[in-house]
Amino acid sequence: MSKKTTTSAASKKSSKGSGKEWRFILYIAGQTPHCMLTLANLKNFCNQYLPEQYVIEVIDLMLDPKRAQSDEIFAIPTVVKLLPAPKRYIIGDFANHELMLMKLGINASIKMETK
Image (cartoon, rainbow, N blue to C red):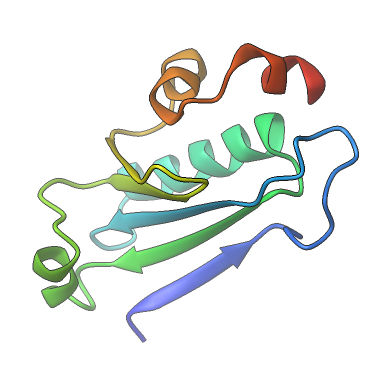
């Protein structure tokens, strides 16, 4: 199987959040410690700032290498934010939450509402 889907009850909208559904694809290459750390950091970020409003799909490019070209992935780990628009590509491990908030276009009011 080329992909694994991890979801967080996106259908149960958080009363504290904005009511949006956030969709991410994480591209990794195998079950390396760095790739697993990136997935853990992304889940931690989403749980903190987008509780119950997100879906993460994980694509392992070791199992499906053609996806790298068709999905225009040039580095790993790469996170693609599909929803809400606009689509954004982020390369890195999601360790710096403040930087990720900025790159994803999440404003401070969402951050404050989810605390």
